[in-house]
Image (cartoon, rainbow, N blue to C red; front, side, top):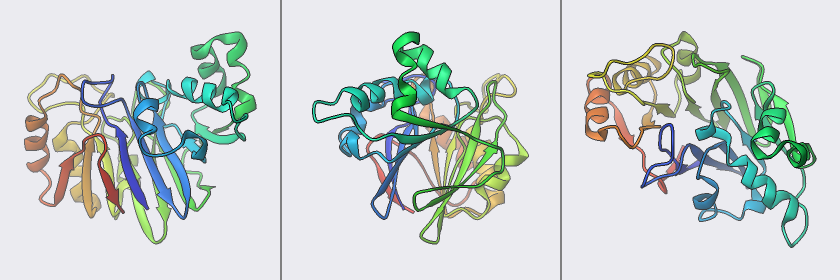
Length: 249
């Protein structure tokens, strides 16, 4: 598998990065993990939008899904012809919700371009060459972490979550663990929302992951503090990702 960091800013697009969007490729199949605010632009630096084969949405917050509206425009009105329908795996109600975000009347036509399929906690699905297992996380809306397996390797993605035992299952033995760290240990952090770098590192340590990629750091957060928090609980290889980076899994 190959992972490209298209956007990694937490909660809203930052000056250096769009919101969450990760391109994962294997055997010529291209899927997106999330398609958040501002991500559709930089995504085009990495591939022709007509070559996207599937989209996997962790949850329905703007910084993880709203650029599907722009992708719909490309899919429906491209001058070289309407694109084939592709699967979009997402929490329940994603179709109507995203139609409303685009504009209710015309947005309902999203179903012509996207085959919305609903995640079921723990139910594995086959997406091209990828075996994907979603697990329900701890977040204010229905949100999923994902475990992707292909070519003998495992990529784990936390999505957005507070501490939860389900994340142990997602990360267990992963070659690469893409994990959010929106909070810092020095802050007064609300419950049931996000992780700190120290918590991300602790999950990575318990799971015995090969590499930890820390993501979803908001632009207002001190990245050095997030790194120090992560280092306090994880002795392995880790990096705070930046837009445009590419990793082989």
